[in-house]
Image (cartoon, rainbow, N blue to C red; front, top):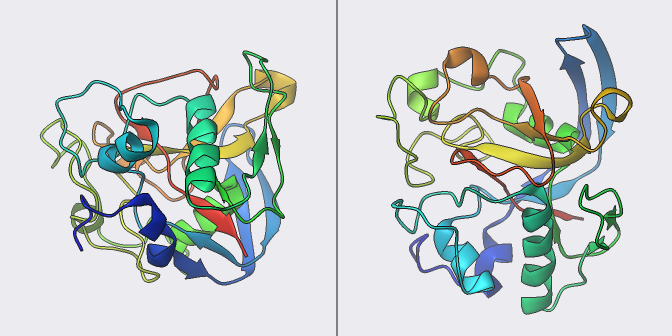
Length: 230
């Protein structure tokens, strides 16, 4: 079955089992490191596509991009809502509860629920590295769509080489929202996104590169990837 025609109920069958382990995260601005234990989880092999987003929401943000490209122009709050809607549509327990806070600070994640959610920052980088310790998991031109080879456009998912765990587009093509607050003491409700995008130079396309924005932020090279707890 093609990526484009994958119905929501079969998404679970395509998710990759990620083994438990640990990851050392680093914030380059403050030059601090911290170690995180990561439990086993499931991660989608590529970002949510425009076709899947439309199948669940009955609409997708306006874009000239094709159905197999990552959906973009989706805020963190909208990504969270999508996770709940997909969970409900496929008979799983939604992970998120939320209210009307415009900053999204009333969103609570139940990691014991079996539904879809955003990866934590630690889960994201641990899965991206797939056991490697370098700047990225392969040669940039082979694994990623980025500024020098993308032609300034987002490309179909899974058209560059995957990492050792079978995950595509972890580097390049689009940035991906994570669950975590970036630094609430300094940036308040801003959430983390990872991975680099089609418009970025090599420095932005590294496994450790962290960026942030308000949970209502939308832009044309920022999407998200689905995760489930095990």
